[in-house]
Amino acid sequence: MPATPQRRRTVRRLTIGAAVLAAGGLAAGALPAGADTGHAARTGRTVDVQLLSFNDFHGNLEPPQGSSGTVEEIQPDGSKKSVPAGGAEYLAQSLRTARKGHPYSVTAAAGDLVGASPLLSGLFHDEPTVEAMNKLGLDVTSVGNHEFDEGRKELTRLQKGGCHPKDGCSEDGKKFRGAGFPYLTANVTDDKTGKPLLKPYTVWKHKGVKIGFIGVTLEGTPDIVNAEGIKGLKFHDEVETINKYAKVLNRQGVKSVVALIHEGGLPASTSYNYNCDSPGPGDGISGPITDIAKHVTPRVDALVTGHTHQAYACTIPDPSGKPRTVTSAASYGKLYTDTTLTYDRRTHDIVRTAVKAPGAANHVVDRSQPKAADMTSLIARWNKLAAPVAGRPVGHISADIAGRGANAPESPLGDVISDAQLEATKADGKGGAQLALMNPGGVRSDLAFKASGSEGDGVVTYGEAFTVQPFTNMMNVVDLTGAQLLTALQQQVSGPNAASPKILQVSEGLTYTLDMTKSGADRIVKDSVKLNGAALDPAKTYRVAMNEFLAGGGDGFPAFKEGKNKYVGPSDLDAFTAYLTAHSSADKPLTPPKADRITVVK
Image (cartoon, rainbow, N blue to C red; front, side, top):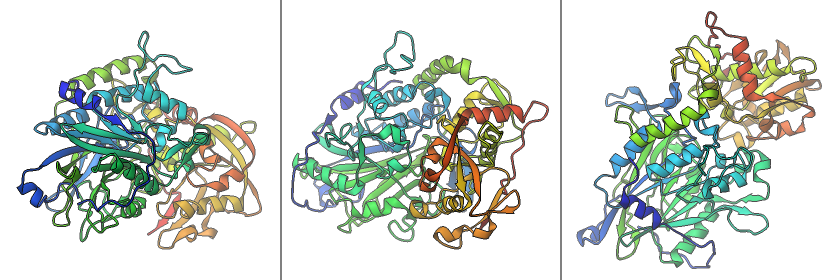
């Protein structure tokens, strides 16, 4: 059902703060969310505000296929269970159910709502997802790196509305209305004006309660998006930006502040209900968000995070030593986080204390619950528009081919994609490639054997292929010396990728050993790197195929920018679908590769 009148009033009462920095002194340390309220609770001057949050939805209006559409759950006996989850019909229903009995409830997101989306959303420049977010009652979100996939102008259009400048209106006679919630870009400024691209913060108000939201994306966004889309923009330090606007809000009398940060962490377990505060606060989580959390001003009362697609609800001490919630709800709408913020009407601040753990927990968006009827209608309407393109068969598979859901550096689907890219570019006159490399983040899903529609089990449709490869990057083939190629392989596990390795998917014929017992560049065993059985020659020139994002040095691979004699081939999606068509049929479906090109030593 649509948002209730009360929800609509709440949304209308969101006020956008001015992007003016006011100098100010240090605020007193805020007392984690949902903990024991002490004297304030006994005097009855507090009210509990429900904060519902999620992140990295990526346009997954329909439940994700294969292992991409499951979450891992620890059972009481210690065993682990895979639970199907996600989809806008169930996310909307989960949020609406969670809101019942909570007169003070606000819903926030931490970026990447759109971008790298399945065909149902991506074909229409993610207008269907923005429409769904409006309907399910999203109040505010930060931007993520993927909000910049189509550039700053397109992000502004998603916020303000209007038809696409090239493709026009997605539906005849209907003008896109834009997001009914603010996209926050506190740390993304225009080079010329110095001002944030969109609003830096917003203040949620309800019956005298005021909570400020500051939204930032990761400072490293320029390293993981196409440079063309962010020309004229600067991305600033997350901590400095949040601290700056926390002061601004404090000067305005807004003492309760939540930071929406599109940067995340890596919990020690992949189970959504793992206790990452065991044995001590924040002990079970690592990654960039831990350092950020330790330095963001105590004025901020809770951190809603994303980007790593992990699930956690942790307590990490703020700079004053007091516990503070740091949460992330995995990805694709499979989870939502419910956090209790105890608001003191006298101090206008969130009450935090070290006595108890925070009242924050992740919940599964279970597919056994009823579907939200308005989301079912929305999906059906857009599916009808997409059907002529989406339903076309492009190949056949004999079983699930794991990609995004593979829990290994090399995935079977990564092998298929890199083989497809090599095949599309290896002929003389088409690039002359000898090998192909694919960035793991560009593999957005699995290929599932079970039919997603009426096409039949084992049939791969164009829509399913698009879900795997939604960026439509053009293929590049460049000259690299063996020395440059080795440096690129070392950059998988060093420099910006040292803490969170990005292991490239490799085409058939390229083999090497990855020794994870070592550190940095030494993890690549140099004399193990071979092409078609021959050792890599540092002085020899090789023709290497990759998508244009990688060729531009994206994902922390500057070595690729040194490539010479560039040839531009077909799109990665066209290469993928052509390969599936050429190498499979109903009688001879494609079988999952063994994924044995990279030998991993743990």
